[in-house]
Image 1 (cartoon, rainbow, N blue to C red):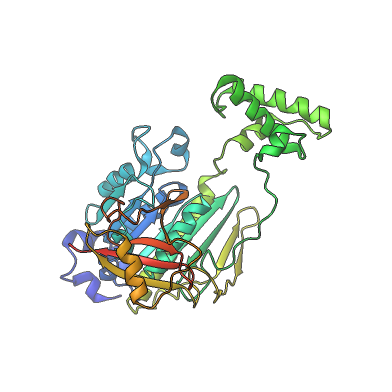
Image 2 (image 1 turned 30 degrees about the vertical axis):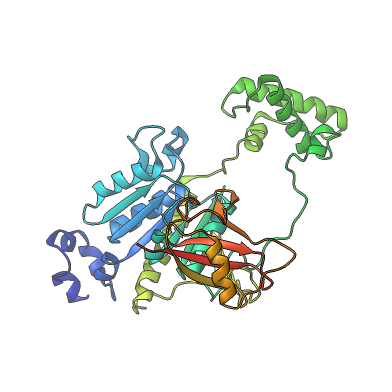
Length: 407
């Protein structure tokens, strides 16, 4: 046992009593956790569990980010929302509940998208945590982790399976190192919708389009009459084009409802491993390896067989996000300066404009990109300090530019 934990002047009497049991672990230093800051993106099945674990461990500052609000279906998997109001922002409700659980730490909830989150929060975090169900959001989190060189502890669940993967920027693979190959999508391409269905699932896509055309709204997965309409319409096409068997009610719901299937036991397993890795990383960053060395492997969990699988994911040196040839620059800018000055600054640094295309500046904007106006200033373009701008139109290729605004 570390005597410094039991009698440390850096801890209050309340903290010493609250964390007494974990003080007894070999190599434990509570002060590391007290001075740590963790950003958790996604306060759902994984995020709630991780936030609860880190709160009870005594991580000093936790930022919670989520754009969603509480739904009734959240309550059987996300204990932080019990007794909270339906439709209340998840991040705010979770922060309030966790503050009651441990008043010794600081919790902040942000009801916003990752793109609109103040970039300074990524920079201040010691570790970034992903509890997301969108690949686009994961890619955005990956981008922030790389440019601020922060470990990203990501997790995901689907049914009875889950995964955990920690990205250590420039050491193992990031999410852009080995992009998946493009394959034929089952999404509703226009030619599929208006023509003959090529797959069984296209019959249901056509049913959905027919519903939207007839009722001028999207079908509700929780409305039985809507599901009956889709099932009946789709199965007529199934019969006509020979795509047996017929769709069942459960199958229709699973396809049109975009929520991933989930169960609290799998969430708990994945979230607990993420929490343990966060704990190890926070200590590792301060030179304390007594809690173990963080994993750099992609870990897959099969809840049906209770087996774990470990995969190495080597970094791709040619990755356009973390590779050796990525171009990154940083500039100070006044809020009243037009963005044209960024172009001039890059030219002065030796970059060369491509004569065949105009320079284009973009920033992430939810699931798309927002183009910036070179003739407008930083304030008019809604640029904040530490915003990341992607600039194309130079012979050298794309350039990532971090903007620092003068105070």
